[in-house]
Amino acid sequence: MSTTEMTVHAFTRMLERHGADASRWPERQAAERLVVRDAKARQLLEEARGLEDLLRASLPVPNPTAARMRADVRGRLSTGPSQQLIDWFDRGPLWRPLMAALLPLGLGFVLGLGFPEPAADDDLIAAVSLLAFDQGTYLDESLNASVEGGEYAP
Amino acid sequence: MARVQARDSEALEHLMVRHGGALHSYLYRMNPNPSDVDELGQEAFLRVWQHAGRWRPERARFSTWLFRIGHNLCIDRHRKYRWIAPIKTDETVETAEPTSLRRAPDQAFEEEQRRQAVRRAVAELPERQRSALLLCQFHGMSNQQVADILEISLAAVESLLARARRALKEQLVQFINTDQATQ
Image (cartoon, rainbow over all chains, first blue to last red; front, top):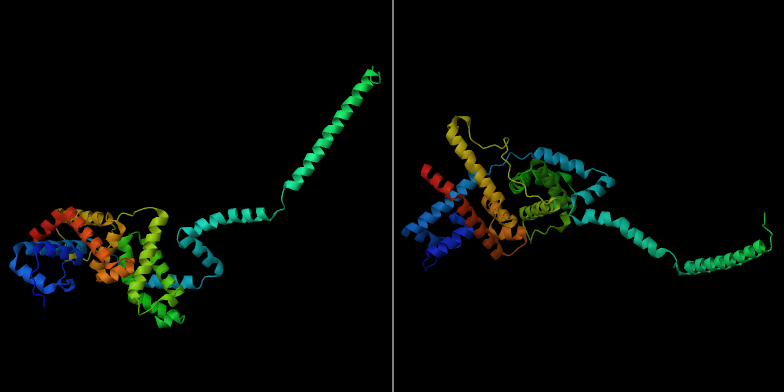
């Protein structure tokens, strides 16, 4: 049994942390002695009880539909793997749909890494381009010479 | 629960009968959209079925574990859809007031206003304060059980409860006094 007397300040703290139900109070005997001798403590207790009564009266809940819930759970337990996969993405935390969205991106990246280095192709293209340029210059020169010689004269 | 761990679906149904109502009430008060509540309740029991092997009786009571699953689903739902549902004034909610005790229209109007003020005040509490308060107030959970469900320390739960009760008392003081005056 606690022999120390509880202060109103300590009683207020206790009410805020444990509520108005005396069976939940950690220092019940000291608190009850305070309530008997102190009007302020009685008032605080009445207010705390009033708040709890108000909450109980104002937050009713419809009767749970346990039978429907059981039937729904039973139905979902018997679904196939494809539905379970959809559920896994759809009903889980946010990272799951995000992962699903990023999966094609990651797949493309991995596939891209699998292709050969493009440098060799670039060299080949550059070489062919230069060759075409050289041949073009040669053709232009031949054409000019032909015109000057009167081959294309009207 | 041992039978559920052995994949006995009838045992799961038994658990749903025994604990489904309490879980439903908690989810409803946390997230009072009936379609969401049904879905979250189903999901919680499916998780129990899927992860039954993870439950350890020496670490937590089954109800504590179930409420933790339900609470986490509720938080995930809030984060996923980024909305805070106002507590609905649902006409289908049973107020447990028999016809013979129906009050005069003025009094009924005042009572409805009071109910709405309480629901609004509770809905406006931060999520963890609301959870802690509802679990203690309506489900008879000890502060330690609430700490286990919310996965926080006992001191943190007591702090949440103190802040929640202080905030509600400040906001609803007029109704508390009215109640006392009418008693």
